Length: 222
Image (cartoon, rainbow, N blue to C red; front, side):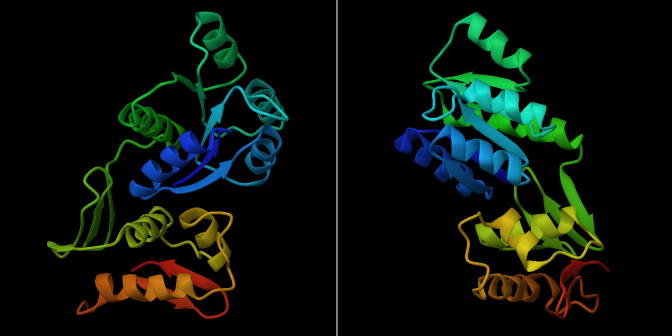
């Protein structure tokens, strides 16, 4: 899952970014409204966390313009304004939820998970291909009943593949959804992580699930 945070307070933005990265999300951050609008319009995100009081372009204008551009990404407003009128205005302009500062990260995370489930119309909590299972709640991965230990980035990579079974994923697609927009796609980091993941999920199994299409990308299929 890929999230955009638009927040001019770098301390708050860093706190949120760290929290979501620990939960295996890929996170981009914009520190002003113009950059936030540009990233939100140009890139495909699963969710946007948007502060209202921003330099260069305020959050309500970003929200309005994104909806005018037919960007239907779920948007959660994060702001110090707590009046009913402010909340109603934001929701009427197309926001999906509203959280007032100060906040507990656990509540923000819970609200984000609800919005992501709603946006994907997803009810299942376990992904499966062949005898490989990934639990979206506990983050446990098992193959043929044996638990597989993965790093946070390996888990994110596997989740992305399992959500897109049978689809060819290019290195650029993987970089955008598992890392962030600052990632250098000319490095071999993606190939290294995929090799590590392949060893963990396919080693000692006759049925290989993660395949390389030379010159094209990667695909997960039986």
